[in-house]
Length: 400
Image 1 (tube, rainbow, N blue to C red):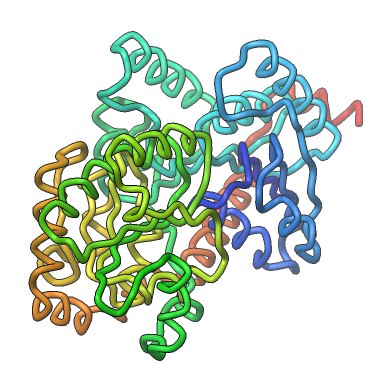
Image 2: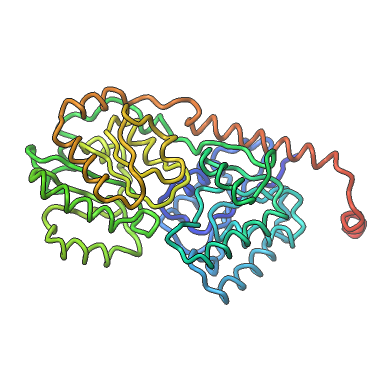
């Protein structure tokens, strides 16, 4: 008997949570499981999701990332109706909005097993205290109907326990992983890596610092521009590129103009040739204010690119500081700039870190992570079969 597993994610944009979700539904064991994917507002990966063989795809456009009370209510009603018709054995939610609305819709629809993956917390010190308390309260309340949590980093596990979102034994850490078959390999020939550099206006005498991320508050692109301004003042050969797009693009473009860096920073938009892009970089810079465990750092490590990143979420678990790169506190522009300058001015240090890269431990292997998710599904389904049904469930069975 196949068990229906329904994954819900708010938006299929380019990001770690989305890639993990797509990889999971695409490669779940079809002998045991029937995968379904539900997403909300249109995203760049929608067409890719529709093309996955053997995966049923549903879209609920009223499910959006931003807080919109009336649309949120509509999304909740639509999700509940959809789940009642699909009758999945397991609902597995991802991201904050889908995590709250999706879990309550699953509970109201009578889904017996509800799992939520925390791909980093959207609760940050930059938010008003009242909003932090509200979000933590919502997570605690929704935790009452959650069967099991999956976390992508030990740092998030510690934080969740401190906030009393779950208890010991109710969660497990499964790394998001990177597809090392795609990202791991020898550096590109100079002619190939030079192609992307040329597109960015980067010549042979320049040093390229780059990142791959959406232009949204979590990734702190304004900090990226501020770091670039300080680095360019010290290292004339430095050039910067941001690969990605998003809601903050107009503000970032304005910040670049104010800093007089139009010829030094390029916003390259979304690209799918990420291994080629990364191998063209001299330093990878991640300025995030919060994270789960950023897959992009695993990709940079696999592609032998020296890293400068913030200590956001599980970033420190993605690479070894001093061996593959350096860590700084989120928002510490001076420290981030100093580490980038240090690497750009020390070619021997960059080369040492490049030689240390290229290998990803098995705990970050996407296939190993997939097997762990399947084992969790099987364990929870087995436990559900041996559970004594309550009176409501017995009445439902007799009326079916």
